[in-house]
Image 1 (cartoon, rainbow, N blue to C red):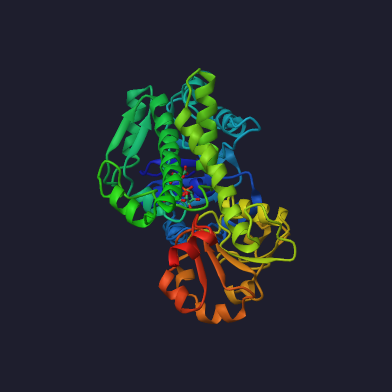
Image 2: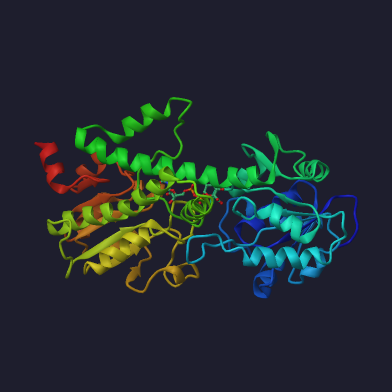
Length: 444
Ligand code: UGA
């Protein structure tokens, strides 16, 4: 790394967190080098080929590289003279649900061995409370925890306009230096103990999971009481102590963070003998939600929640774990698809981010036939299921689709579609959780 007046930051790992962090720090004026052991990935980045679909990210990478503030290397030694090295490596769930810290520890040891003693290591990866201090003691140099709160599809925005920056450090001088990395960002900066920073991250994701699971249970309750869930969550969310976010019912929470982080927090709590009943219940509700959606589809198509679907073709609208991303990791849509497949259904699917034959489609199981268009996916289907809340599904030509399906049945597991529009198109719409018999009764 060439010397310059700007702070020199090394970023280890160029996944969605690492790359966003590197590009945004370069935007803030720092001199950033991002390294990754994956040579092919680094070559692509050096050619400014960005395979992560994040609004604004490709432009920031280009801007950073053109300005000379951002570059990439497959050699970890090239961050040796950085003032800070940020570890952005995966901490996936191990077989017992605990976070697997092996990549993080290896990366920490590797960079610590070559950095000057005053340089600081920053852990951005999500790690269980106690990890930062343990690594600091082992490496004999300042290690800071600076969790990320980036939502996929809004990561650049969340980095540059965060609700808070959290810096967990046992060394106040190192914390003050790290805080200066975020100069120019208008948000509260919380300097905390390392364990607090680690827990803030897990507690935030677990809270979101609890909130969404609660919304999913409320949805079922609303159906039973003849209430409208969107009216209920709107009314509840207007209380500023509750807020409207994370209250949309759906097929369950998925993605690369909430499922892994709830499990890791629960395991960490178990290790210190603290029961984490609420989070465990949210996980159980989430598992049940997949079964509920599957049961709803089976019931609508076959007449029974456990009816077989042999000979039936179900069209899935949406495969990704949420809209505006091509990420299929821990997608509730795929979990529902697995169960429908096991029940005997033939599955076709359309997702705007998953084109047949694309790199993204590699994550789709073989038993799902991906289509280029909604028309191709739904032709001849016995039922349609909306599993991801892509806004463009609202604008589909539902009249045209109703003419090419075998049965005019739509199960909307995201409560996304306009009932009046679908009714006009001659389709029977079942919102999330509503069984066909109940729909018939509610029209009587
Ligand atoms: C989540 C957190 O929201 C971020 O703050 C955090 O930084 C990130 O994890 C992380 O730890 O890196 P993300 O995984 O992008 O971000 O996903 P969310 O937008 O939180 O959605 C998670 C899941 O919950 C999705 O499957 C989504 O469809 C579902 N969801 C979300 C609902 O079913 N209802 C809602 O109201 C909101």
